[in-house]
Length: 214
Ligand SMILES: N[C@@H](CCC(=O)N[C@@H](CS)C(=O)NCC(=O)O)C(=O)O
Image (cartoon, rainbow, N blue to C red; front, side):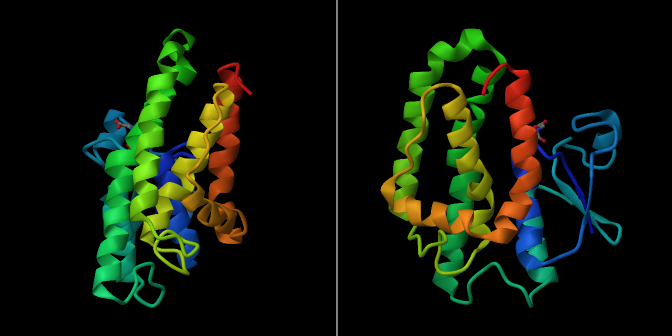
């Protein structure tokens, strides 16, 4: 299994975590030519990362990858048995990709361009609002959908620490909704999660340092 991606990429980290939680051996490579490059678009026409190459089968889009891994390795599931619980996991995963992550990504411009930082209060309020709504939908137990990690945790496990780190660097620390604190503690204590987040953490620090932020 090859995972194409970059250490600093949120969605690469989401897939790396799913691979680590499943115990699947993989080799991580940067996309040839870099993401969005013509060389990479010959492999993944949309030019995005991550993608996997499993015995010559190339697949992009993190949710499609996670669902593929679920069917390819059914003996190590990250979806619950129960129909309604599986639907709830998929709902949370969609809320990550469609609602929460875009609000975190919006902060990237403030890191890159100091002149944009006046937008911080509005962007932070929009993120706080999404997190409050997430806390209404999730039922941490302590993972977002119950006692064990599921596909629902893979994206949030990187996006929420990223939001915390960026807002700390921008001087406006994030306070996660109280309902999400047990989940946060469970992830901190989860060695596989910490292993998967390691490359992302280091490259995020390098990025912030290069932007003159601590
Ligand atoms: N929906 C995609 C999003 C992936 C994504 O946005 N990846 C970023 C890096 S974290 C990227 O490739 N950006 C380049 C681009 O969008 O052209 C997925 O889930 O894989």
